[in-house]
Length: 329
Image (cartoon, rainbow, N blue to C red; front, side, top):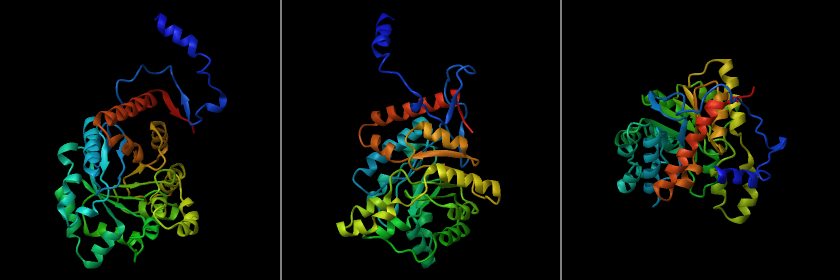
């Protein structure tokens, strides 16, 4: 106790806060509950229980590190009761060389696990009248369903990019008509405006994942791979987007209008920490969880212990948020 009190004296002046540092999103209510012993409830996603409302958003696949990263992430999902979207599975559609890097069902157990393909690949399959590759992919991975990433700006900037010949909404609608597994639709770092959100939410999707502006931006990533003169020409476009806060408001407005058939949302893109996630899912009028990509990636590249410690700290923060923080109107 003496050592602790000494610390208090030495650190007192360094730990002062001011009005300009207060987080204006929450009321702190310390009188009503005891210290939490876990999160207050389970979170249902596609009929499966998640112990925390935290989703591992899809990241890149098909690299030498992908297998190690995916195993770490799947192990954390199993231990902490989270859900996971695989990175793009395009590389294993016709070649099994990297299949083991994506085959995570034994590691993740019964937690939600979703395969992932780009809108361009699905458009091509539908043009050929053959969706068997995607059906086979989901079956072999024992995935719960499919994530479709919609990335026209990324494809436009990518030197090896695919051209889209149909509006993504048409492709998604056709896929839903011809399949019976759950489908999630996500962007890749720009987010989506009200017309796109309204059109998507009218479809019987399991979820729309925001992948909003403010996080990893794959259009900007691809632009960085281009020659310098092209970077200068196209650079203004990568600053176009909608952040997660505005997307959440737009979704809530659309829900108020009615005619929403999508079951839930995954709020991602610029989610820096558990307080961002907690705030946004509390404000959502649709059932919501929140997703992170780069934060998971940062801690999943090394030993599992590093990722385990980071995830545990996120959940501990969420426990305090659910117990003591009330979102301001």
